[in-house]
Length: 187
Image 1 (cartoon, rainbow, N blue to C red):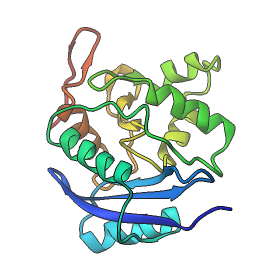
Image 2: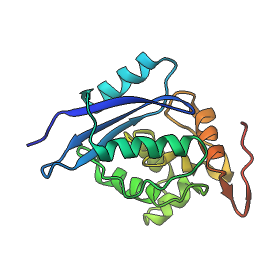
Image 3: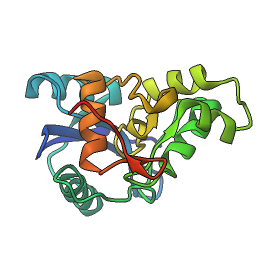
C-alpha cells in the first residue's frame, strides 16, 4: 500500500526549501521530492505539492527532521553526503535512474561533465540524454545534478529557479574544483 506523500517547508541559507517524502511498506520515509527556493514561499510550496503529489505534513518523522538539518548545514557551507538517503524513484525510467546513481556518487566539491556521465554509463554519445534526465530530477540537491557540468567546465543548464546562477551558487557553497583547480564560476 502506497501512502500519500507529505512535504514540509524549512529555512536555509538560500531561502525556504521544501522536502517531500512517503512511507514505504516498512514505514521507512523515502524522499520523493526536493525543491530549492522559488521567488516566493508560495511558489516553492506549490511546486513541491504538485511535483510530489504531496500534502503538507504536520509532524515529519525523525529521519526527515535529521535530513532537514543536514540540508541546512550543507547550504550553510558545510558540505554533506546524501548518498545514504532513502529515495522513492517510482515512475523514474531506467536510464534516468542510472544517471542519478552516477550523480549521487559525485562527492561534494567535485564535478563531472554530461559527457563523462554518459561515458560512465557506457553510452558516450548520450550526453544530451544525460542532461535531459538531470533536468527532470525530482530530488535536486539530494541527487546532486548541480555537480554535472557542460563540456569545458561550463555550468550548463539547471532547472531550479535561478537556473545556472543557482547551480553556480551550489557549486560555490561546496567549493567545487575541476582538474585540480578552482572552477571559474560567475558568483
